[in-house]
Image (cartoon, rainbow, N blue to C red; front, side):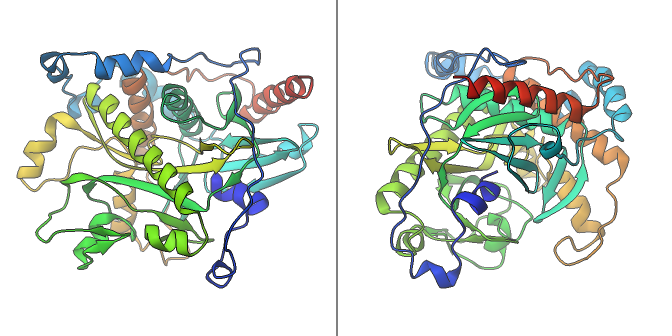
Amino acid sequence: MAQCVRSTLNPLRTPQSVARAVSVKNPAFASVSFLRTLPEFKKYPKPCSLVMSCQGKTQNQQEERPQLSLDDLVTSNRKGVVLCTIKDSLSNCLSETNLLTTVPGLKSRIRGKVRDIYDAGDYLVLITTDRLSAFDRNLASIPFKGQVLNETSLWWFNNTQHITPNAIVSSPDRNVVIAKKCSVFPIEFVVRGYVTGSTDTSLWTVYNKGVRNYCGNELSDGLVKNQKLPANILTPTTKAADHDVPISPNEIVEGGFMTQAEFDEASMKALSLFEFGQRVAKEHGLILVDTKYEFGRSSDGSILLIDEIHTPDSSRYWLAGSYEERFQKGMEPENVDKEFLRLWFKENCNPYEDKVLPAAPAELVTELAWRYIFLYETITGSKIDIVPTQEPIHDRISRNTSQALSSLRQL
């Protein structure tokens, strides 16, 4: 999301322009609140309920965690219920949108890797599609993926307001959020708890090549793949047109991307969000392995959390119950994210260089759709509504977005 927003509000600095960028005066965005009067807005649990569940237990209670297994993914009764719906929706994914002709008042559209972003004057309309992005490319369309990402982010946004405010104004549709415009810091705050990954910028990839100082973090010799780090670390990246670029904290400040105070505050928020996410995941039998956060500045000078948070797209999740045994045996952890599809593409093509990629097998697409749903329902404790309707998805989004913007303009 932020990459697309940035292109109109806060253009990415190139290496040539970094030297000239001493400071940035950020236009802003007011502190936000959810508009409960808008159609289809879903009330989520209050943050205090999760804070209490994480902090208000004895040690014995904290150790009594549910132990998920691969069987929960493979043989779950819930999977049988939703699998037919997923298969029936393989040809009805939300891969593209064009609200410029159907929603009054929209000025322009930017097509991101996953989200389509529309300029609505004082607001941005963000449509989370079913497109799957990895290796800086779109690999496939996954049924209900956009809905799951959108509703997962809303749940986490609502439950992390005790850590940081966020940019969301409302969610008028299961695939849509509306946000106030802001100036976006051109940095992704990637937080990692384990040495793992398969992409060029993942920690295991660079570590396996001999790198021992990564984004300002000193890494000891002798680490092995999927090992837990002694402490969570921050590995920021800049946002480039075609590829994320690792960067150290000193380079961020010296290059004018952020001031030292801005970086320190955003870093603290990112690490606190990750620690909270790890605790919540652990309570549900999961390990939050790594993730990324993005931030912008508000009109009152405060730093806001933007973009998605703790979704299967932006995060890596493993099953906690089997992790230790599989790690000791040198086996890959059981995961609940898109890593298995990443690995399929790496095994069957060069996803960074091949001009044309093979089509993802339908059974893998179906399995990934189920895992997205499984993760949402495991974390939130509620079932997601994926009942298909006869109304085209695009028509539903256009109608709900039009109503929401009309309500906002009357405030």
